[in-house]
Image (cartoon, rainbow, N blue to C red):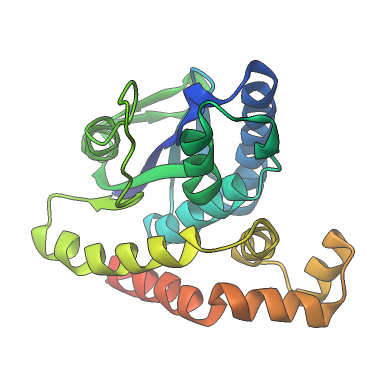
Length: 228
């Protein structure tokens, strides 16, 4: 049986002050709880800024990854109080989190005991650790979404798709990301309007601006290919 395992690390996390770092971690805990309820995802946070998530229905891997990405980008961190590391904190606001979806088998998976072992988690973890920006003086971030499996055709197939989604999300505002997250969590527009305290027409507008139709098509394409 194949799984999608998502590994992710927060962009420029070391540049956030202690208060903001804790705030991000608390938000991540609530995110993992929501993902468990909606997709039966098992997730854990390591060192406050690194995520590991197992998506039992591998076809939902991209939907969950994009939900994580949009959620993190919508975390309300005030960048005005940062000056010295301005560029790094700006990178956090633009990209939020770098994510790799590892697709493959797990030789051992026991959520109750926190055991995840196998090729899927090796794929995602290796991809993320190879892309780290830790301690680098100048950060140049080209891509923050990756897909890795032992099937080279799949990897080549998804690479341009993820690169385009990456560009789309990097340009999204916090409010657009809030709407996108709730849509990816299978909420209808009237439910989103209630949750955010805005009109349904505003939800529709944010949804259109963030490129929801294209994102939904990409999620469905991923599901179709992985389900084959």
